[in-house]
Length: 506
Image 1 (spheres, rainbow, N blue to C red):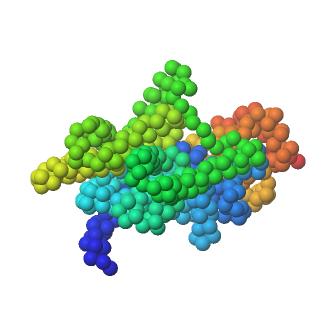
Image 2: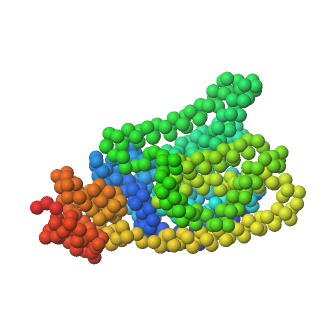
Image 3: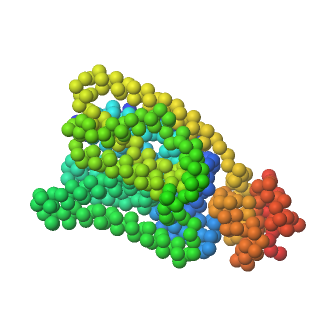
């Protein structure tokens, strides 16, 4: 162990201890094995469904599928399914348990935060600030909720955090291993969620313009220019290849389920804009503690203002400015999605660490001049961190406690009783009460169609019966008297804790 590692070890232990303490405070370990629930259980069960299919059916990595049959046996692609594939493999080792999925998500999140801590510490040459910035980022309720959930957004952000560290190591050492490691991490992040690349796009623009200027001034050769562009081309090619394949995969399997396009603000009517804006404001407490948000606005403004720039490298200034512009551009391009999909904000949280980081870096000359000023500012920021933790704990506990009306937890118990009622694993079912693709289907681990496919309509139901649907399962009591169910009331074969099963074919 080197002297440098020995010196850093107490800080690493302290950071890990504080991070674990926050996880306990956020009640992570009490919900470790809980099923997907609460707001956006719809999107969470899509991931759970894919992982379970990889586990049970052994389909290849590039053949993602879900329980909902959609238009072609459930074959559909969105983000690169590598994480669902890994979860499926882990199920073979540990069994199909929610703690396996949540545990992997938590582990990757922790690694991401740990490397963010290392990056901030090295960039500022101050481990206290590195820890404060990283732990402050971990007070965003949206990151806490989905970082221990079943969607890919926080995992993509974690890979970006790790890539910041590896890129900075490459910047300091010029060792190619760090660069190619960064390309791999960025490519994974980009294929998991293309929106995770905002900070990397800003970096590429700054790097590209700087390199171009040097080339014009004959400070670098054409060979150097081309060799510098190769990693960018390789990484971009990997990301483009996946989304091209996903588009092709969805086309040949006749599905448009996954959202692979923008939803810009300029496509909205004035009424829609007003409604969605109100919804976004309503979500704001999920993004960050209110005082914390206001402090970030002040830090961002003071960082962008062209003052004290002599103590701030030009490349850092432009990198941060472009990151802010990328943040705003993404917000405008996907504006309507933020109304009901708060997890879209997850990858926008990337702006929090650099906002504090570059503010401290820019005004570090003041802190270096006055030790008491530095300590005092750290104490104030620690108080803000503590208040943010309390807010985050309250919001995350409330969100984890929500029970969605779409998911009846008894469905998981009912899964093990299907054979008793003569329902074969190979049978196809319809769940007309469920507007999502996979909530009920995943819970009982059966293939079929849901309200998303329109099976509450008689013509669609008849079509699905021709395609092999044998049973109708309804767990929503409000749906019992619907015409589509009423027609089959004489064919009720099971009523288990309010979960009713109707035979569709004789």
